[in-house]
Length: 101
Image: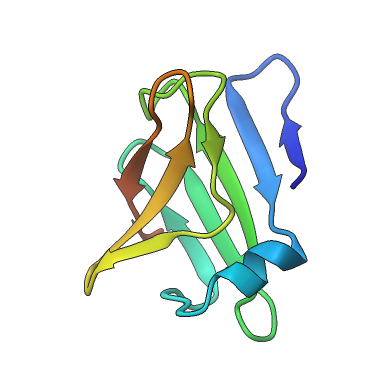
């Protein structure tokens, strides 16, 4: 999976790969832009909502530079879809997503 980090910034953009799409069966979101309370964003796009672009703000989400956001959100409950990040150093975390206005 490719992770592109913005130069001189604490934000990153991560694009989904084909293996991410195959691993995610019950896609919880339709095309659009979703954001966390702290400003990280997930854009869902494509004919079947199979594309994803994540802009993860480590600082605002209380993560660290080793955190790796997942390319696809996870559904925790009926109205609880989250951006999830994994990290061996800090333990990772998640944040609830809502439709950006």
